[in-house]
Amino acid sequence: MAEFDRSIFSLAPKWQSRIVDDTRSRDAAARGDRAWHALRLLLAALLLTAALLKMHALVMQPLVGIGLFASRWLVLAVVQVELLVAFWLLAGIWPAWAWRSAIALFGVFGAVSLSKALAGEAS
Image (tube, rainbow, N blue to C red; front, side, top):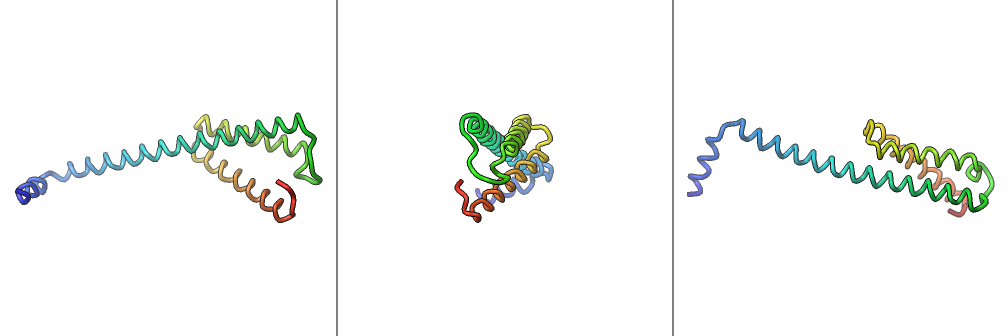
């Protein structure tokens, strides 16, 4: 009986196997799209939260520290960039460029954090 079933499937036209492959690739693409949307929303929420907390700290507390990283203007610029990238991710416009911008922004944040840590500053 197993040989009979195999012989039936071997007689199936080639186009049917392509349909199955296309369906699998569409399912994988749909999973990838869902993962991208979830990550996009998570990163946007993270950036919005960070921007709002920085704005709150600017209004309620004096800046602590000396140098460029303690400048009120620089912190305001960072807040604006965070908000811009967060809203860009939420909007979903030009997703490849939004993704690259988010990666670059987090890379800059990592480099600044590393330089502060190596200088012995408090976080």
